[in-house]
Image (cartoon, rainbow, N blue to C red; front, top):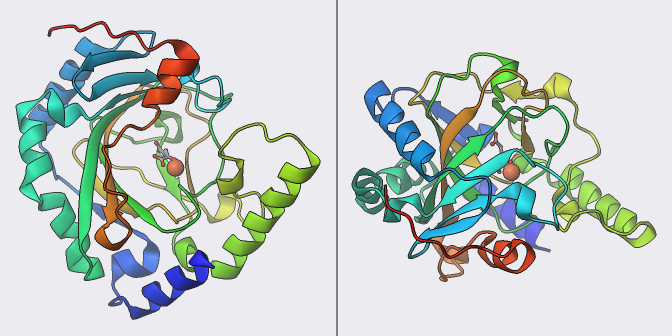
Length: 270
Ligand SMILES: O=C(O)CCC(=O)C(=O)O
Ligand SMILES: [Fe+2]
């Protein structure tokens, strides 16, 4: 089973903050001016419907994804490195991959830089989950505005939980059983973590604009559910370990958005 292989891989890694906790916070990765510029850029592309921006860059409005009942206030500009020179430089610079590699001793590939826009939501936020079951994937979150309060919707993690193999397997079996007895409500149900973890153990990551968070997505995590204060802008960079690299273009939700919502191939200029 993949989760047991992942456990063996974790045991071989050097021991440091990132490999033991599953995440690491690096302040002041971007300066405030650059964060503000990216927010302005994102605002230019925001629409209330999913659409193709240009090439492989597109906006997904989660509301359009009929297969998903969670995160209805989330919009995401996917492959934003294709429409911005500075993001393109960051994408090709290897800087983010190297930060992970220094801790893990393993080569990763950056697949996409996205800009995620989370409007306040106290109703439909997805609960604790992992991104996929196995193999692990990785994300780098960069807050573009200050996240000072629960109401700002902090990224929230259970430190060290990527190494809780038994608890992960039990959750997986539980979700499988639930899916047998009830029609799955979302296609991601198997990644939902319903057992063993609560908000008491969770660590919300409060940090200033420009902070980078390196994260192993086998960590049990969520965006804080009581996001009731202000819109949150973040860069979310998607990475995969080279040994598990599927190799194809990054097209998160693209085809779902096309078929389910009728992705509008309108091209716009900023
Ligand atoms: O945006 C967040 O704080 C977390 C969202 C999430 O679950 C993810 O990006 O994997
Ligand atoms: Fe997630």
